[in-house]
Image (tube, rainbow, N blue to C red; front, side, top):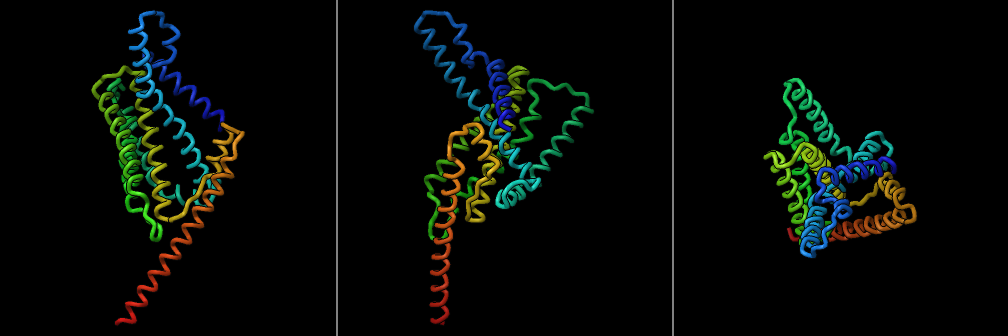
Length: 271
C-alpha cells in the first residue's frame, strides 16, 4: 500500500505541475529575470498557486487511505469498531458507485463528447460533500454525560470546512464555465471527487463517535501511516489516548446516569 500511495502522490503532484505550470515550483528553474519587482510578483503568484491547486492534491492521498480502509472493513479485515462504522455508510458509497457507472454508460451511449466544461466527475461527489457538512453540524449537540463539546471548536471546524467546500464549489462552477483547459478540468474534477469523499468518510467517523460516545482507531490506517514514517510510536500513543478517552467517557456517563436516577427517585417520592 505504501508504494501505491507514493505513486498516487507522484501522479497527482506532477500532473498538477504540468496542468498549472505557473503554479509549479519548476517554473523557478526556468525563471531568469533579475528585476526585483518581477521576482516578487512571480514568487507571490507561485505561492498563491501552490495554495490554490497543489495543496488540493492531498485529497487524493486521503481518499486512497480511506478507500482502502473501507474495503478492508467490508471484507472483515478490520476491528469490530471500524467495521460497524463503515457499515453505516456502505449503502451510500455503493449507491454512488452504481450511479456513476450508470451515468458513464448513458453518456457513452449518447455519443456526446466530453469537454473541458463537463462536470460529470465533480458532480458525482458533491452530494457526499453536503452530507458531510450535515454530520459536522452534529458537533454542536455532542454531549457526554454533563460535558458538552466546546461550541467554539465546533464552530471553528464548521466554518473552516465550509469555507473550503465553498472554494471547491467555486472551482466546479469555473469548470462548467469553461475557464480551464481539458487537462486542468480533469485534474480538478478528480480532486473535487476525492475531496468530497474524504470529507464524507471523516465526517462519518465523527458522526459515529457522537452516536456511540466511544473512540476507535483503525489499525489499517495506522499501519499505512507507520509505513510512510516507520520511526514513530503513533499506534501506541493513539491506542493509549483512545483508552483514556473511553475510560473518562464511561465515567462521565455513569455519573450523569446516577444523577438522573436520583432526580427521578426524588420526583417519585414527592408524588
